[in-house]
Length: 408
Image (cartoon, rainbow, N blue to C red; front, side, top):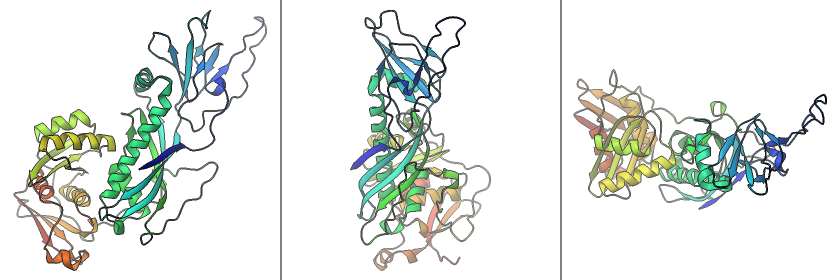
């Protein structure tokens, strides 16, 4: 369940001067124009309140003004431009909505995240920094304004809330409780599950961090981050996120560019719903489960991922289809990304080796991390469809999983 989304910082409470400043015309040509008084900035709101255009105003920095006129499509006005009312404003009223173009921090709280092993994380709060996309001179803003009118902020907040929550649920579901810690949750969201944009690209994600997690009583201890009046979001480049430990032995990979399968039909479906560039894609249905594995230049966002899973699921007739999207430049990177998404304990991967003139891709797996009962069932990584989809994607004649010692 999504608890809610809130803006960070004080709310704007002034009137029309929030995004536009009154301009006092000089009484005579020789009289200098009166300087406009300082007006409060937009702060941490995505939009202001709509107001009637009944006096001459100018648009302020870090804002775009949307003009709603009767029987006309919305028009945009940019910083420094003047807005002038008509001769009879009451007969043809014009409403102005201020939209913030500066970064805005939003807190999203999601309740009851369930891990792969069925444990319930009571609550998780993330702070997302978003900014309106200026692509095509804010073309997406004009389209959304035409569709949602002055309720634009409500729509954008709902989309951020829904898409962040979808990503958080997916990230937690792919991990066991024992493997999750605050840095791990943040890295999981950053690497794959948290979308880089929201509302079909209208809002861009500039930064985010995990603020608080309420773990199960026998899980990791929750250490809330103190809230301040003006919270600071640590840039991603300097955030204290500990990366996952890399396998101890060196990973052997095939030389030169990867030669991957590109299923034409799956490629068409991908291009219809997702922007990341495909380097290879393959899928298979084995038994009652289906898996699609794709190598991309960047991970798809949560919304894109949900659309892809739905489309591929219809194609393979599996509503629970597993989609694996890997950013990789080598077969070793590909296997690591695949392993992380199909196995509950990604630390079990020890090494990846190409053997016999690259005809065999051998994957060493640490069985010591499995329970006695799991080891008794034999070596297993992912589902049958997960393994078969990987085999179809890579050019190797065989893909073998073998028990390996972590000492090499």
